[in-house]
Image 1: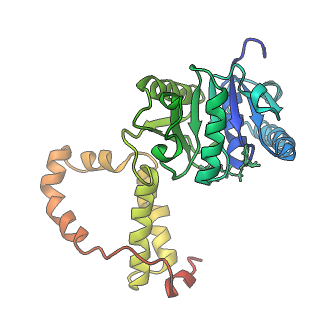
Image 2: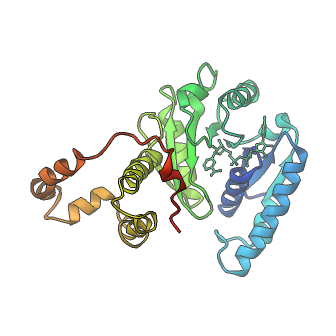
Length: 282
Ligand code: NAI
């Protein structure tokens, strides 16, 4: 079974996110090599993954069509980076969110990879132009930002460097779909990518509403968990607009002015400090 498996995929950094990626790629039938500078991290990751997969299997929540044992067989630890990159079709970097560290890791990988592997970063907020500047293999570089916990939240934001080849984006998109994730193409890099920009817009207004004494923290959370969030778990804001009237044009016609009226009352960016910090939602 293992000889016919696709891959291998190399995970660089065996912490929280690296482990999740390893499980996802194995669930899609890919061989996975787990690399880390700390040997103990690899050992811990392999133990953790075994435990998690067994529990998931017991509760019928294991992803993919292979058994836990079959998936575990696909994942191996590797402490030599030169050996680790050999034959890899995709490298997913998962080292801590530190620009200098990530640049060092990418420079090292750039020197030892071939021309046909995708070099992908899990970064939450560093821009591709910062991460991949000057790399020989920049055309093969992309950000594939997962959402924690990636095993349960399928979204992956794909963010190219200006010099990333379109084929790299297409290939990564197809790979993410193959392992059951939901990739989206961010067409141009922007701070916060898409998910965090939306999230920060919501957090910002939530903060102001609590700070201004308009709603309590727990009621604010209810508005989302028992209201807006239920809607958005099924359809996005743009589809909601379309369905809330006779199409988008009709929605903008009907509600455009009142939306602008409300939006003009939004306050400045909160400081995220002071008394509001101490208000507990529970
Ligand atoms: P973590 O701290 O759990 O794991 C990082 C791993 O990288 C550790 O095992 C560490 O030993 C290893 N490492 C450090 N330097 C290394 C090197 N030079 N070569 C190889 N391995 C090295 O970090 P976590 O949470 O897994 O985050 C990894 C990346 O994923 C970060 O960029 C983070 O922003 C991103 N991310 C994190 C999310 C989260 O909620 N934790 C969500 C989405 C993305």
